[in-house]
Length: 593
Image 1 (cartoon, rainbow, N blue to C red):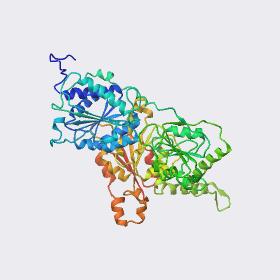
Image 2 (tube, helix red, strand yellow):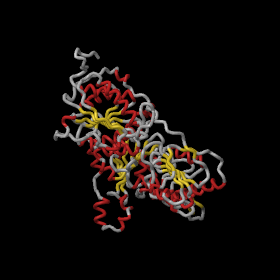
Image 3 (cartoon, rainbow, N blue to C red):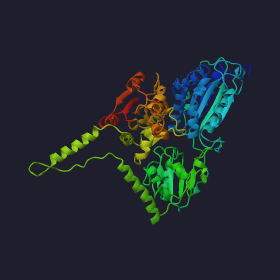
Image 4 (cartoon, rainbow, N blue to C red):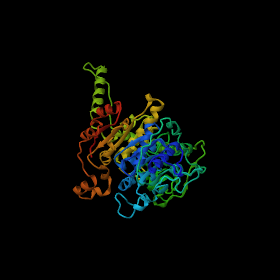
């Protein structure tokens, strides 16, 4: 665009709008496909630029009124797509409300870019409305932070914005432009704090043909990690896969011929070496006490037995993580830290076969022992003494009907949801008892299961599930609409209520194929497992830990426009899980405390 005689570019009456548009277009060119906006006055230039870019088909825009939900929505979008999503907020407490999502992204290694609008520097420290010290608000949780001075319409400002976008995107993916490591190895959140002066916005209309120029390319390749360290055969070894481990942990265990302890959302909960009943076996003589070496991938969070194993005398502990500045290191007893590892596949010895076989066989026996008993069906004998097929069939039907009419237990719930999930679906777990019940019981299957285990918080689970659903279904529908999967989120009642605001999908927002399956036991029964539950006064414990609730979830669903169903017996659960999911819905499953 030509410049006026003064030498100052004059694309619009608002330098804020010009820089906002340049910044967002540069992000899109670099691979960003999703922008989440939480409305506000100071951020209007960014929000309106995002809306214009959506109008021409250059980006997917998502609008949320609550910043905490907006951050976790962006987190879910990034988890599924592998690209950072942008989160746009106004100034003041709006930025602080992003903190839980930023912390989860930091600890889980999820790319996320915060664009916070701010007052210009001259308005700081003088009690200006909605003004606080936004630079540094996320402390050490971001890969990169920039406090950007307010644009004035000077030459080169839009070019500087474009460079800033490229720098921010590289940092969120865990690398600088050359591909080298940054201070925080691996992906994570970035914070660009943008000072903006009046006029805060001006109309900018783009030619729809510009969408092709800003179409998002394929996701950037991850940063290169050092070559894998060799882990030799020899000691009696178990492999542990926690959150973020991925399928590499399963391959490593299979190559070494070692038992695999893989949490349900590790990305490695499958394969012939999987040991589901690991808690019991790690406590059992002849199993856990015989372990000489443990190789830990990712971040285990679902048991006490794994940290206890790492800290046991006589066990060599090796932690494996491709990124991060904090390592899994309970009791500071880890002996080696590696970015990646390998072992040489080899024909197993008799001792190695016996070691693996004992773990896998014992695990299967323990898991099967936890299944509900079904009475054997014997052939019936009629009044003449002949075997009656009719009598046998009648007995069979009686047993089956009794099972279908039985109340839903936690074990039945996790088994049914796990079985109903296909490889092209997505499954999200909340931070409740149910993820632990699933981790104890469900068989190995190579499906996409996720949970916010960076900090293992209860907050933002609904928003995260929506983000995963939207991103996965956008990609599936683009390739083959007939094979687009669904997303199910298995959560507790308090997890739903803590993030209830994320149920609000306003006009123009995407309606994903998402089923929230709420195991409702009337409060936080996960705390019943605490030692203090056996000694604290019952009334006090219930009030401040269990926090009983009696919310009418059917009315709640109706208020937010979500479909609702209730399943209290097995037949109702099977029917609800087999029903076509064509939009957002809530399935309530009453559970005993």
